[in-house]
Image 1 (cartoon, one colour):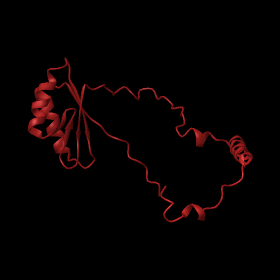
Image 2 (cartoon, one colour):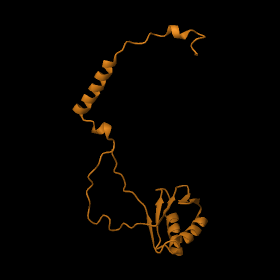
Image 3 (cartoon, rainbow, N blue to C red):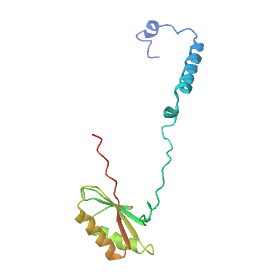
Image 4 (cartoon, rainbow, N blue to C red):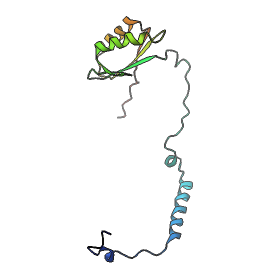
Length: 144
């Protein structure tokens, strides 16, 4: 044992007496506080919400067959990995042949110029994509 050369074992405190009843008292008090003060926020961090359905909210929604992600730095990511604009056009041509009516979802960073998105969309339309959509989020209201 490592403690033998320095004789550390003799300098340790003795083992405590058997206090198993305090363990059960502490456990009981914890359970009691959970019941008294409500534990739904402690034990269930994901709360179910009743979301209201609004008629017509999904009227413009269309399920897309392909998607790409465009970052602010100009990187374009497809399902097969990063590509540049030239290889993206070739990827569009290959993917347009895989389904009958291909549609594209462009997930772009907010700092990507709209000219780049328009160029990507026109390249997709040129090879046969029927629909091109750009993903967007609602602006968050200022909390100040």
